[in-house]
Image (cartoon, rainbow, N blue to C red; front, side, top):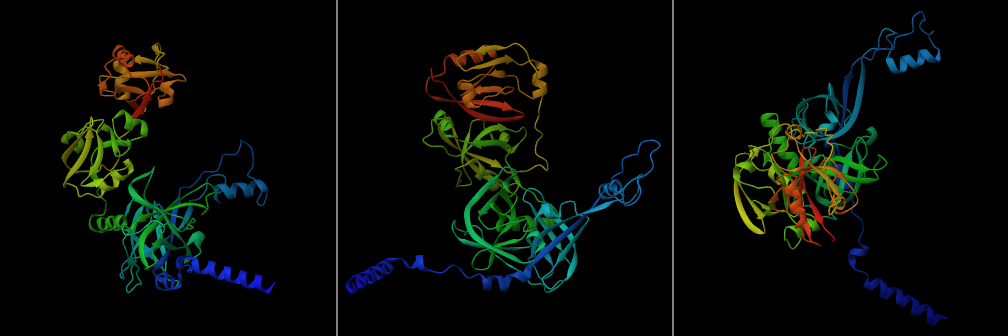
Amino acid sequence: MLKSKWAAALLCFSLLATVPPSATAQLPDFTVLVEKNSSAVVNISTTQKMAAVERPELPEGMEPPPEGTPFDDFLRRYFGEGGPEGGEPSESKSLGSGFVISPDGYIITNHHVVKDADEIVVRLQDRRELVAKLVGSDKRSDIALLKVDAQDLPTVKMGSADKLKVGEWVLAIGSPFGFDHSVTAGIVSAKGRSLPSDNYVPFIQTDVAINPGNSGGPLFNLDGEVIGVNSQIYSRTGGFMGLSFAIPTEVAMRVVDQLKSQGHVSRGWLGVQIQDVTRELAESFGMKKPEGALVSKILPKSPAEQAGLQIGDIITAFNGQEINASAELPPLVGMTKIGDTATVKVLRQGSPKDIQLKIGSLPEEEPAIASGKEEPTGGETLKRLGLNAINLTPEMREQLEVPKNGVLVQGVTPGPAYDAGLRRGDVILRVQDQTVKDLNHFKDLVKNLPKGKSVAMLVQRRGSSLFLALKLKD
């Protein structure tokens, strides 16, 4: 019995000896980081005056309800104290976070925290409340710069998100639900994330708990440096259980510098619509693997048009930096100085080509997307694709802003066209490298399509262009 106990003890000792040191290491201690930096993190509250809402008119001959009755309480709750004639203006309040970047009172927060605010109040750790002036705000990056009248304020140390590694520990300080200086920690889940509404920000994705009120607060690395500005969360519940996204410090500070110097933000612009290269599209373009940003539309009078970029070009590098996915291109272009000459490497009909172009300025508003309402009749069914197509009339072309080519998809049935993603209302502009002139030309192109091989098809949908990969099975 004694011998078996010694054997078990020796076995446990030998197992512990083989465990790598990293596995037995303690989790990071964030206490010093919090003590040094929490005083520079502020709570931001905003007030927005809401227009008066008129009470509904009472039926003729009906007296106002007596005070204290349920109907009177209902009117007061939803239409104010102004009686049946009308309500009184009310106020809408919101909460967020921010952090001090200079001793003289410059503060960074989110654009959406202070949007449309009539008054912005900053509460410091010592409980002082200061009215802030909005220096400038940028919707595309979700960054706003505030200024309070104060001196010798504690500040944070700005770091570099470029040096951040996936898996690295990070910490957020903010005011979730109005609770000042709350601390949450996690790791970096990914870098360079592009969100549908923010094409010009390569977000840092983390699993740090971010709740309403955390927006605009700092994201720290273990060295106590701010490497991001907490911006938003993707969650099914509306709570912290989701994916958190932060704006990299480099992006935020570029915006801050421009807001300080000129009151608004300028970004570089190519003037193209792009999309990802899927496996099927890569096959149709003769590529070994999916990579790059596929140009599906070139805007008129844009730098891209002037430099000779073409629809169907695949941008594989910008100023020497490889483009693996289309989402990587907009932030690179946006951060390029307006007027600079950039080198764009493209793959055109299987051959690499370098194009020099002069970077333009991104318009304040994105070009409007036409959404014509078409109700054509007739058409011709192409059984090989499983779709019904029709020629475009001059009126349709004008309404849909389509050039003098292409056919309109009238209907789609189960088959290759449906599998490729074609839908009713799409305008087919090109098949592989051939521009579709009219319905008869389109039918001839379809007859000659190869079997079992992906073919790139350019379509226009609600004003935007995109490539679809079509594959015929027979």
